[in-house]
Image 1 (spheres, rainbow, N blue to C red):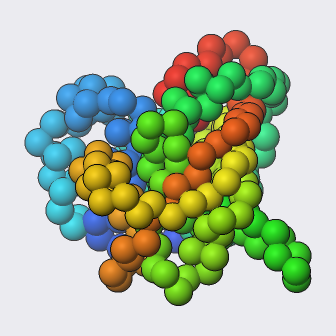
Image 2: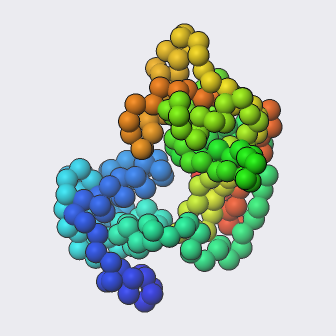
Amino acid sequence: MSATERGRAQGHSAHPGDVGRRVAHRRKQLGLSREQVAAKAGMAVNYLEYLESRPATVDLETVTRLAGTLDTSVWYLLGGGLDLPPGQAAPSPRPVVEELQPRECWAKMEPGGVGRVARSTPEGPQVLPVNYRTLDGTVLYRTTAQSTAAVAVGERVAFEVDRLDEALGTGWSVLVTGPADQVTEADAMERFGKHANPQPWVGGQRDTWVRIRPDKITGRLIRTVGTMPTDDSP
């Protein structure tokens, strides 16, 4: 751990349980089992399970070992920078930018998450974050009939989703464009609810389904020289 990171860590305290949730999230991003992480970090599997599932205060030495095992930073595991825009870390020393093919773009978007819907208004561009899923070559999100996100229905919109790995200086972004329409067919809503139901973080009753049918999809990947991109890499 660098002197800068040590200073940041000492100046930031995470709530009990926060570190465990971030460890579990990062572990799943990397596709690692608890057994794999515990073995590499030199700790018992049952302790890692306890850490991930129950509120617990973790000492800095343990956090440092887990950060190294998970290819991330102590600062990230302690929740540092959550109120800052992503991309505060230094870029990779030897970055390579590659264009993603449409099938690769869909593979990146397929897990779902949070993306941004962009539309034009008389006052200028408007960008709205939404929880989304993909199904049958479309992008889906749920909202309320009175929300700003529902106004996009009937318009041609852009949808963007990205992922940055601050620790490795890598990332990707995907942009799709196409018309947005409201899903009104009962059988379609039933299918979407069963197989691709996005759960909005803002909560509440959100019964308006919006579907974006992309007619153009592009993406870019930033990686470090010497690393091979994969469908699951950030």
